[in-house]
Length: 107
Image (cartoon, rainbow, N blue to C red; front, side, top):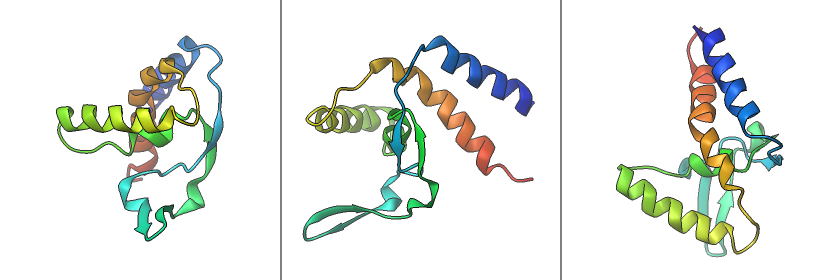
């Protein structure tokens, strides 16, 4: 079963030609974002990797679909103040989520 999943993930990446890879946190979720008087600080950097920027963005979303949509709008608005976002990467969220689940699956 994991072989079929990996094949579909590979296919999803192949369908999106030439996605830019950047240095990622790799485990970017709200639990790895601490706040102090200067602002946010990312912690737990042991999973850093190269990959599509959406990998570090989708994991920041939580709650209902409506809440996630609002969070995505705010996150994207902030992101685009510093860099362009390739919207083709949105098609990689589910394949990336599947890879994460496979990575953390027991045994």
